View (spheres, rainbow, N blue to C red):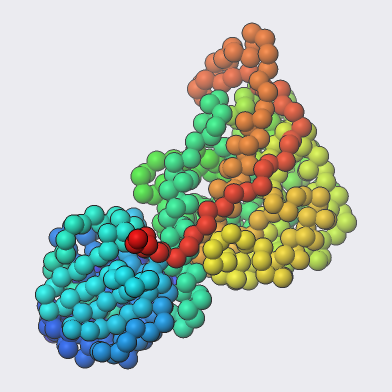
Length: 484
């Protein structure tokens, strides 16, 4: 009779994604193979990296061990980049993760993790008990005052995982940072009360990754890959309509306070791609969703779809100019001149401007261990400096991102980079909106009624003032509080 896991399909998929889309093979199930440490070691030793899962009535707690299970009686080895996780049953997408640099041993039938001479996590198979250090239990969202009795213990071999401890360290820390970024973005609200949603416009050459970035952002919040925005790779733009995409939070089912706007690709030749004369109308909020672009003629005020009196909340608040990082060296003078035209219009409208460099080879090389510096590799740094000088854009407003393309599953490293870039754009917009002076006089307070809800008189804006240097959250390995 086949031995099956207690994990649901969704719970197993969440764990597979956490480790880089690996496969899990069940090695040991305590209700079948026994609750002794002997039976556990007999089936789990020399099996490579494993995940040990403990089942409780309302939750699951587990630990990942890179490399083989420790042999009984062996003294503590060097700290390894493991991690613990917990989630409520049927809510694996809300997984709490604690990175744990710990020594591991098996002694007296107990699997023990120690960090800085303190016992952090201990599984006693014979007694079906789990003990967790209070600081670690708080990190996992499991608040206990004594040992926990579990119902079942399962151990899985992790197949297809990279045997690179540096990579695993990045994956585990990225997963933790990903959850923090998701929480921050779900709680985000624009600082200016007149704006309920931040509008981000994606501009750039054909095939640079504008639509792919929109799909990538929507996928991260949905918890699965989605491809709502049409993506193409031809020399001519696939996107011919102006599209405004809302971003829905798959966890809560609510729309988030930012929207992504897709446009026709820019081309160095006149009469091909997005007409530059359309850009100021888009920036001011005069172009409606699903407007059909014409490369030869821009929208005019007498067009039936033209929005004559847009408010501050209707305008574009940030322009992300998207470039393929692999084509930086081949950018022509005509393309630079086209960007300068766009840049002039953006600055005149008082709109934030950033550059996204897409199609990076390996985002794991971009994400440093502490996530403080994404431009640390020599290749990335040289490309960013080149773009900064070429386009006259501050280095701190240039970001690298790896979109989802042909993947079938989400990746925590890509998710982290996508969310980080989105957060930085929203922070830059907030800085600029906070600096806008309100129009004086009675007209400034007079609402303009429309079928789309309350609108307000357009605000006079100053020229764009560069945003403050970005402040990043440092993610460090879990360390217990030192005892006096």
